[in-house]
Image (cartoon, rainbow, N blue to C red; front, side, top):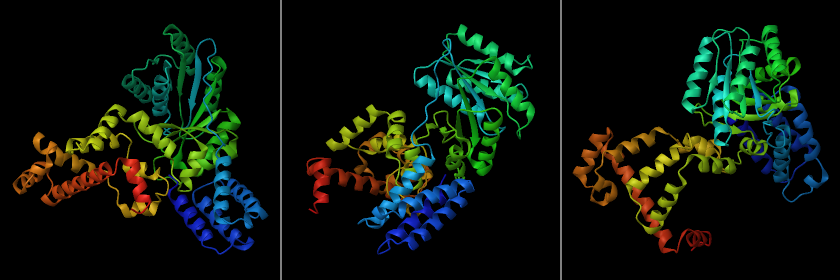
Length: 445
């Protein structure tokens, strides 16, 4: 997501930074590139025009043109305007309970990912200490009901469904009653979708909202549909109304225009984003972090949050202690790989690091399949070889290569990487720890 937009904006800002001084002419030229980049990213034309106009007004101010670092000032202005366009700050879900139960209605067209999102939201709420119940209110597609039941079972959340009734509003009403009986505190309603917006769909959503007033109405949009997602959002806003948008498939190759356009066009913020297929792959939409990603400045805060949530911190601390004491072996190396895999695709993790642009990632040739090869090689070793890699001689290397389906050169490469890591570890320890080692490196010693 945003890959091409990030690349174009990065090139434009570098060109601007290469100027001896900023003038009205080169700022305007740079902003033409920014506008083209936004339009190519499928951002709504009116939104792109307004954003560029705001940037131009501020970038041509006397305080910027007279600054010692004018290009950096322009980058800051672009960042600030992107943050404002995306909503300024994260928008929270309204889960205030009416009579003990908060109600959430999930809407959207068929194929947008509504049902999967319901499961992700339910799992997230369970982690927060809530007790949700799912309601299957799609009376047209039995497969949707089956899917919701399977998802509910996988995350151990109750679900209310009724194959006999053909009135979605009544099903939701009975679901609310059952949720109260089960002492649940959040009701998540998975509504029917259509291939396109029609009067029947809208009337059904209105009927549900009338019989069970919804505290939070979320519109799920497929980010891969680009500008069409914004058109869909506009229709829902006009006919039914919604409180916030959810963008799914944000980990895909879509151009990202929907995320930049929804708030400006509909007045409703993006609240959550789906970033993968697993039930844990749901993130709060943080405008400042998203703007930082778009400008290629990383997203360290989200990376830290993911590490805290998905990684085994006790295991990480034990590994750090072994690293510091010089006891790091190939079993620990394998443990590191397993921890890293919990964070998702390596390319996605690296993108969150400041300064890690797309060109660097392309040159690095990051390939997650290499993890599988490394694990296969280590799994083909004996316990003694993993714990004392120095005993691995030529014949052992051949045996390990045969057992792992790799080549001797690949085994040699892994052992070299391990030795390099050990060497660095010893240098750090002999320098008095990571802080002292860092100080010496920075000091040129």
